[in-house]
Image (cartoon, rainbow, N blue to C red; front, top):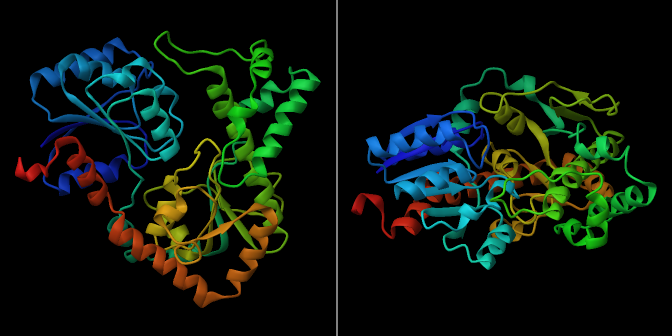
Length: 392
């Protein structure tokens, strides 16, 4: 099959492209920074010319782009997208109903939401991992000892979030209400309650302080955008900072990040790591790898979980509703519920080495056997074309 991929900075783009090639498909790439996810005349013209000059079976993107859908619908070319972020504000756009779209969503709750709206080609598809690539990085490394840690966290602290800028101008009642909402969300494991707490009265007040910027073809609303781009990132900042501080009082904790870590006095700042060459080494060499899922991802499993298990690392994560559907707790991974549980379980597994190693190995073997990119992409193609490409 001939595939045209729009390339942007998504981490899993390279694995997807290489898997398509390994499956025997022909892949071309278009790369350009977009003025807007909704419309970009220069990009639209360029993409349209490529689709007219060469026959492609479909255009593919990581995440959904309305501007790509618009051109594909015009040119009568199938458009396949696979989300790795949630929610995608760009998907709340009238183009999502076009016949050209085949949208694969890693978050089941978001998938069901769009199916309920009447989006015809919306499918649930969890993320994946390329264990062969990760094995090659780790097996060929001579510097693994540099990445050894007791407990490690790789990720952002979201300390530069919109809420901290906005709260300065909010009246006391509104600020108090929003902070109570965030505290309530932090006490709930595996569910997102933020949007339902933003009542019509609260949203009406927020309109005075928060400008909703969207295109005329977008049907996203203030509740969705504020709960994700403002409160979601602030809650993630609070959860990560509190968890790391609590844990660092009891055990050695390392952090790899570009964020400001000045408040994490006891946490060992190890700088940032390259996703492709260094991060797998951290996951393999750390006795415990932490994942804090941002509340915006309501039920799905973020890419970080797959990255950790695919590198043979021991995963300790907050609960997500889809975890029991795919993995077995205390066999493939370990869950924590709040800071106290995080500390207790970390202490336990640091002192039970064989148990910890068995869980890490079982998680690795499961993703290697059942959750590769080749398996996922074949599932995708079978859904879209109804048969395996080599049989067409």
